[in-house]
Image (tube, rainbow, N blue to C red; front, side, top):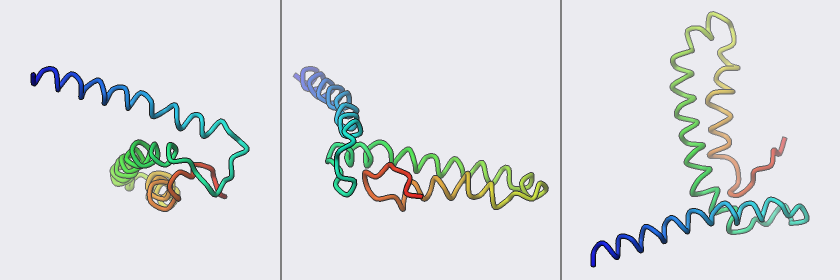
Length: 105
């Protein structure tokens, strides 16, 4: 009985995760949609997949910045390294509105 429950839960998770990209793809293909209103599918993909990946990118960028900071200081481009490795991923992860992927600049 336990094996049957485990199999059903596994298949539900697999099929649910396989359907996530389709909702976001359909929302991004429609160019006539209003920019202020995002679909729930895009927001769901953003909160479940993109934000955690942005957090990982920010943390990895911070580690890479710490390792490369002596070399950046010798080259005189510490601020540029900080912006590219830490500030941009952090801004993408924490300051961007939920579901907005367009570059506002």
